[in-house]
Length: 215
Ligand code: TZP
Ligand code: MG
Image (cartoon, rainbow, N blue to C red):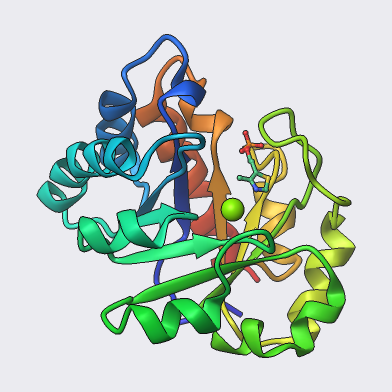
């Protein structure tokens, strides 16, 4: 069932490098116009100052459209820009530490790579969970396994937290992913590499909403 605690259905995860030939700020704005509900800035190997500078530029756009901005990995950057929230994985600062340090965090996302994580206190502390990855993807190669549709169903049966499916999400698998129990699709390349990010976002969003209706 759709999760009312998490009203976001299409989640854009963006970095400058993943946008290759396009300007990432323009991609973000076009994607919002197409229907993206929430955006995560996911930069690697930047100093906090550089990450913060990029986040400030992106936040001007997300604020203009009243879209929540999530920062990947860096608590300092997230707090510096007064982001809506943060997303972390198993090699980052732990959700329990983040909760203690950042009282204003409105969305704390945590990546699930092992089924055992569903029992731990880090997962309990998180507001939403990333299913990471649903399918293997060239965008992130240091993954442990792919969950597949069966993995989404298994995780869904163990938690009522909002589930964000990530990893090679696109128009051809969106319906199956939602029907397997995900609340939201997170995409990098489907939108960042699209010839027309607005149109692709629109089509993805429509597919997700239709799939939720007939769930
Ligand atoms: N975490 C798990 S897979 C992934 C991340 C950040 C990358 C998803 O990229 P794409 O291009 O949408 O497959
Ligand atoms: Mg991380």
